Length: 102
Image 1 (cartoon, helix red, strand yellow):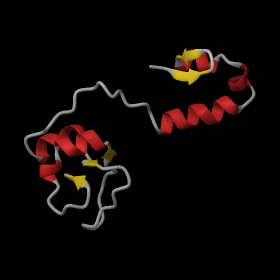
Image 2: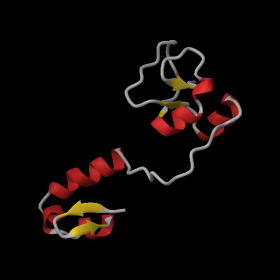
Image 3: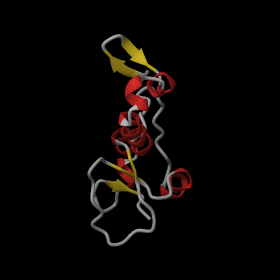
Image 4: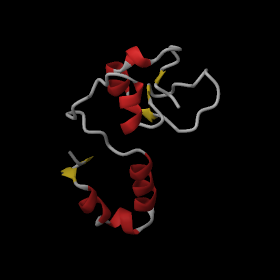
């Protein structure tokens, strides 16, 4: 799925070719796209057997958006994804909204 406009949907490439992009607005939009990539809602959510398996793919664990670690300092930033966290909620031992934090 692309970006909604008054004429329909644009892909990222089409968005970069618009006049707004060439006037500097696109730089801000592109920066936001890089910081907050669009998640595919049709992607399969995996429930991992344990934290060792989850941390191989997500070194910082998985978290609910806005979750704050209450277990001390961590080495890695978690991946914020509500569906992924909900599938692996059993691995959140301290119930702070972050499963398998490292």
